[in-house]
Amino acid sequence: MALDWGTIKSLLIFFGPLLLPKAISYYRSLRAAPHLHNLKITPLPPSLIRSIAILLAVSATFLLRTLPIFSPENIFTITQSRLQIPTEVLFNRLSSLRPLQTLAPLDLALKNKFTSLESRLLYLQFGPDVLGTCPFCTSDDPTSYLYYAIPSILTPHIFNLVVITLVTSTFFSGEKAATWRTPAAIASVVLTVLDLYLTSSFNHQSNSSRLRLPDLDFFFWTSRLWRFVSLAGLDIVLAGVIYLTGTNRAFVTPPSPAERIETVLKGLGNVKGKLNAAGVVKNTVTRDEGLRGRSNAYWGHEVRLTREMMEEEEVVRGMKDALENRLDIKGLERDAEEYARGVLGGLMGVDAVPVAAAVTTEGPVTPTTAGHQKED
Image (cartoon, rainbow, N blue to C red):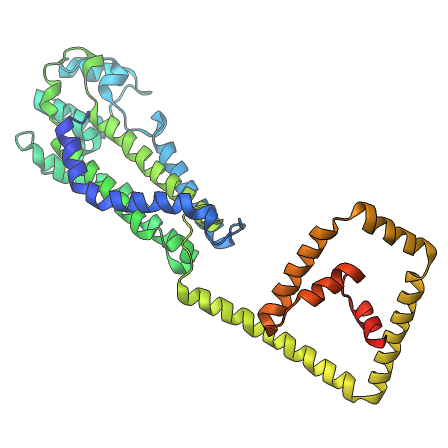
């Protein structure tokens, strides 16, 4: 089943233009993902967890199919017989390994087929089921066995393609998994075409000159092994990229300009609504005599408490010590000036230097100190 350089080059020429641009795009998105809009890692939604679980379960099933207990029986291996062994001797050895020392119907069908070396060579290429059950195949026309074997070759590929289509559908998994539908489908089709190509291009006559059992190329069993391993690998890779996409770890698609504008407008609408609500509350308090009186009494009480606190000897001494020995006055003035300019200058176009000076000389401007300054 070894690939020569000509076959590899032909496959690269055919599939390279299709797969290379997508590979480059995915690599760039993988590198840029951590820097896109500072997106945070998010937990997987239940729909993606369900999709990943299905893919892992299917891949585990494919891997189990590769175990010898689930693999079709190889007569030459279990009897340790060379390819050119007489038919009677071969099946006598096989019957001795059976519990009742009787041959199964498939064994009898193979016994009738093994009268020629060509049939044995085709057995190594297509396996026991195709050689023993095909009703119209003959060793004189090897392609007839290929036609009969195509459905059994395509069955696992079609099943896996159906699973991929299901778990990457928008209805089943959402938008993030749906972005991988086309690449996964293309990869599945590539595996299918490659499997059919290798089976049809295998030269079964290459085993005719090999006399020792270890030298034989058991193509059917080798191709079956790699078929299930490749399908399991495809499902595992798809589950991995769905996990990375669903948690924003990689392959993150940045929002479009229209989506970003819509998000900003929604945020501005929320801020405007809160400002309107605050204005309504303020107007209500100002116009209602009882609420206005309670508000004035509250702020008068706060101003009085602040004045009494600031006049205490320990507080005065502590503030003086902090201003002289512990605080970076220049740095505080600079930070306050930048903060004031950012808050007031951008909104009202006023010079925020006086505000910064007030912050640095009299402490942070809070509702309490603001009320105190207004009263003075």
